[in-house]
Length: 386
Image (tube, rainbow, N blue to C red; front, side, top):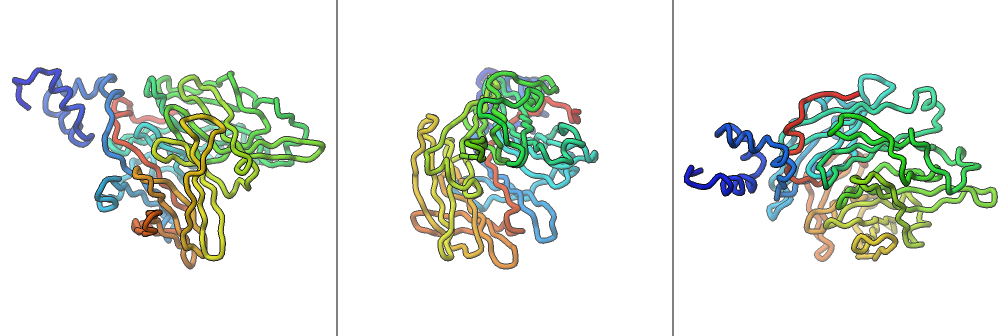
């Protein structure tokens, strides 16, 4: 780049480069390295290209990770990922979620009493690990409790956070619990990367009667779970579906009601996802040899205002599930075939065309998460946190 250009203009040009080029620019001069490594530049950098990270299990039971550029040539730009050591060390890893270009995985660690979460920047191949301590191994052996994780990046400070929620497991343990009781503070913890520590929030905690699902979605600074409200009514256990939101900045929980048709639907037939930066509830069923999907969108971020966008079906005699959406809005579907093998496809609702992504593996062992390029974690040392 010409030295005749003012440095401020050079900064604006550099800011528009993809991450790979930015990392190369760090070796051009001390000034550029200092700029790119600075906290304001890292926090303010926003990649322009969306990618899809696909995690699936091959027939040999090995996990495979593939990144696909979500552009006009989709899915031609597809590459297998070189995993950082911290991800390789995870046993039975699953994807907790994605936010601001970072992905969070969790799995078993070396210690049987603990799990491990890994925050991973795919673009710069950087990862940090956080130990997730259980409530207590003696308590866990009774199956009274289970832990659910959430992950998101604060939109104000770009601080990555892990949310750990420990709650009752099993309807038999809910007798005598009223709807206004809240989870004890030590059962809700938040890990902030900026302080490398856990803390317990005390405001607007979820009630004890709520059981959190395992899938999460981050949209516009809020983390969402699909949950079940379980409470006793005239001696019997009653349940209904709802959504729990968590403000990643203020660290407060809120309840989001669902339309009656969804609130009383079987929870196994529902999941949440993100469609064009909006929260959607996916309702699925089956008829003959077809899997039937209905997509409900929360209107303009307004709780309890959900509109059914569309319903479609695909031929899937052995089952199917939506794993996510392209940025164009096309659903990405896992279709189960014979002998427990599934394929990942993109479905075009208008033409009903199905395109295979070439990620075939064991059925229902697949996850898809979108991410943008980011520089977050560039200034973080490689380390584990207890």
